[in-house]
Length: 53
Image (cartoon, rainbow, N blue to C red):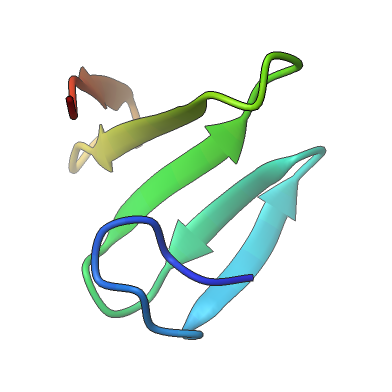
């Protein structure tokens, strides 16, 4: 799985259809409409949605 932001392969699966990039430190998933959702991970573990056009 490639990261949608930095395009590295330094990703790992952290949940059902949820991935983490070790290079740029984001989580992402692909929804049923093939749209990629990207999230910034806060220090407390909460996810902040990043709108990428």
